[in-house]
Length: 273
Length: 305
Image: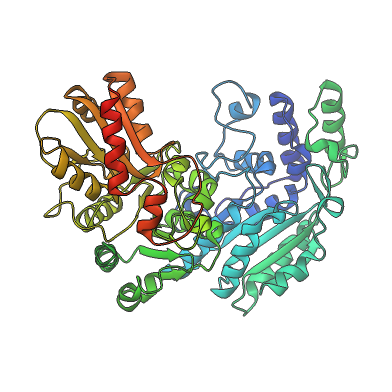
């Protein structure tokens, strides 16, 4: 049973990201927007935090391995009441807590990321711990498609399959871009589903902005009788929700000014759910 | 020394089922007892050190007490970033065992020789560095690492140099142990790991009044104790089977320069790789770390005073 009972309206989450990105004059907006629906579905329907406690010993583990999307996670933690509004209006103020990349000292963030290819292995370790304990906690590690250039991802994939970590799920945000260009141009990935399948994962590819499809796929993977670890490949759009940011990789590094902020807010509020 | 390591690990694991041993496909004979006594607590993570350290962080977060074992050339050197970010940042109770530090793998060449591991890890906050000299220090260091519940890098070097203590010493974090008693004197010795035995032998033969201190801790290091030793000596000789850059000699010199400047001879590996291979003793000679070469260095240093 999910205790949070919150809406996680994706329009609200995107608005929160825009507000904080503008307040902090920060980057990585596109990275956050591609995972909004994934996070909304996970927090709304799947992640169990008994008593709404981010430190509950029997919680599910959600690891944002691609720390560059952390603003999307901050927006969800705000919905949960774990982060206060002041943290958003004062984003990047001197002496403030919330950093531009995830930091595990923030309640609700399980790992410190930003250096890529770390969180996946930490998640595999957590899932191994869950298996040794014999509990039924789920561990999710959300990685970027650029991030899976990193070798430790594939070291961890071998381990997860060998040890039949059936309660471990990697979610790949396949938005097709990394910092300096398209994944196709930088380092071709081929079929991510086929890669994880060849490592022994049970994998499904879905539209990562279709909340119903995300929810169904997660349920389907967990319902499997297989002892394999799971892989959910989410085809997403970097910058999703704001037309001038979509598939425009300059929004990995571009900062909002008053004009683009207003335009983006208006796009988000007018968009279809 | 290796038997003491294995015995202590088995004892800790039997007493606490949360203790896990992770190895990167190393330690074949060393872990026979552990695998027999605690098979469910043994994880061979494969030849995949980066993932192994990340997993150790995840296991620690899930309430386990991982010991991560590898050769010092790989644990910690290959995984410095995982140690920093995944483990030390949040002070997770993971213990790293770097075996075969220094020139132990004398025939295998640069890939397996670890002469920069202390320098690579000393500046990582929250990470303690232990460097035991004999079987007694190994046992005491393992116990202390387990009980501190924060990250520790335990450096194990050449293991058959002989005892430097006659019984299990009582450790105090950061403190050096008297390995050979002496008087307040012109010259004092501080050594760590494999070179403590050498320092004792040299002092006993040539500088009978000198005290020899064994440093089982590179970090933390008791600066008051170091200062007191410096104030009571005219010159200090620091010995380690590690680069002269960034190791124990550097750490002692940093403290001395601030609180009690004296002349300090740092004996260690000069800033270069091994040219050749051979026995361990051969390689010590190649790098001027055999007893004869060290004695000459000390004589020259004293003569230049």
